[in-house]
Length: 133
Image 1 (cartoon, rainbow, N blue to C red):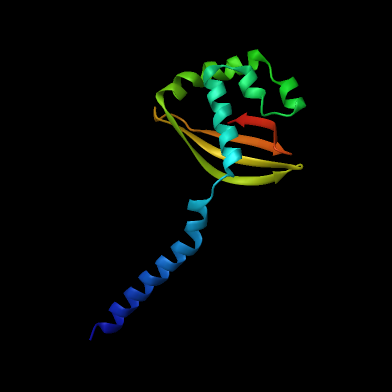
Image 2: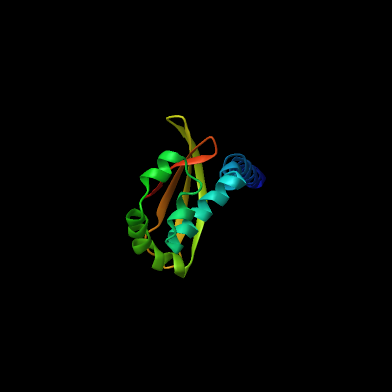
């Protein structure tokens, strides 16, 4: 009789589904807080528009003082054409580093070429750093 083999297969399937739901669901549902997500998206839009005032407005004093028009223009030149073709952002994780909450997203372009990671560091609801890698 083959009943034990079938029951065993069903049991393995059930265990696999439970394992997947237990460990994969929190990762799939992870999101940055909405204000943080909104800030990141506005900064990406500012890169596309090459707007220094819009890019630095959510930043703290050091961030605002350290960012120049030339630096933003360089980022704009390397990414604007790709951003215009379309992109999606996927939140990956949040870290605590040196007193900052650092949020990480995957920036995936519709052109199918290399993705970029966005790291945005916040302290007291102000951006202290924004890196693209």
